[in-house]
Image 1: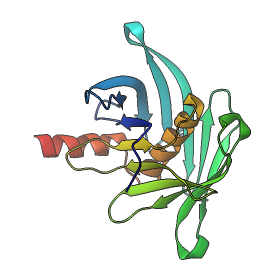
Image 2: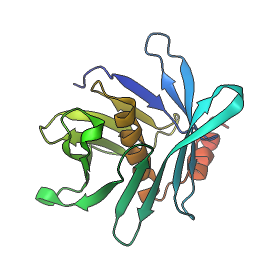
Image 3: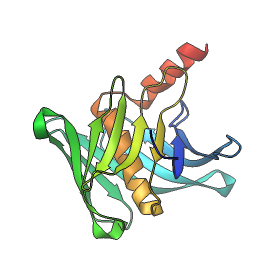
Image 4: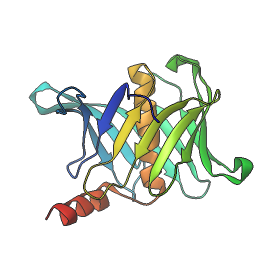
Length: 184
């Protein structure tokens, strides 16, 4: 059984909005605008949503289909590279968390979990850090972070999770079309 999430982010929705879920009320509070475009680099651009419909860009990610790697850039942090791994014949997307993120740091890995488009992020100590449900027919993607973490850490985890969408060839338009088809 999973622990209670410390933070839950829902989206991006068909408009590119990522919202923080208030667990007490179920209310979604828009916090990030995402642009995902498989045909240009960087494929992922994130911006914080500010008052008066302003946005402040803070992160990008680029996926290389040749190497299977994802380069994550979050303002104020060194570049983080996620690389494919086949440890124990199980596919994973691994990265080394820089010390600036705090926490345990060290090697972290996104691994498929069960059936469907669910991936879990594990740290080097075997702690489940996050879960990302990327293709949910009636709902937007959902990221649950199970550890208390800095905003920078959550930003990196979110960007890496969205990179899994790009890697799978699932653009934001595709997600929007799916949501529209099910809802319509």
